[in-house]
Amino acid sequence: MDQRLVNIEEKIAHLERHLGELDGVVREMYDRMDGFKAQLEKIRSDLETHQPGSGDAPAPDSDQQLEDDKPPHW
Image (cartoon, rainbow, N blue to C red; front, side, top):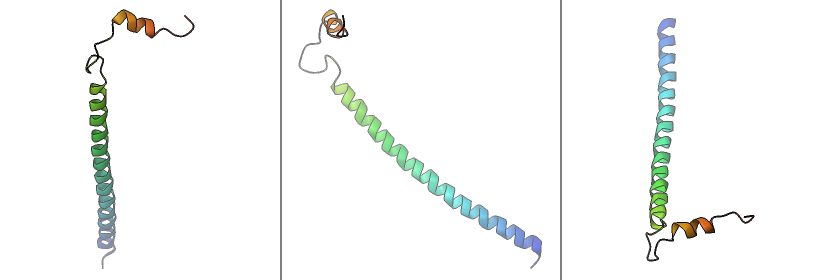
């Protein structure tokens, strides 16, 4: 075979291998993103259920809340 043709076939083989590797990386990143989305939705849901005034108890008075938030050295 012509050396030029051999070089072209080698380059194609390398490109196909790299394409397969990149496809795997993209697939892995997509799966990780799905996991992150699920975690984010859970965090959002948890935060919404723990918002002041979202439960059965009345929302704390803002002055009282500030008083409770003072550092111990005050």
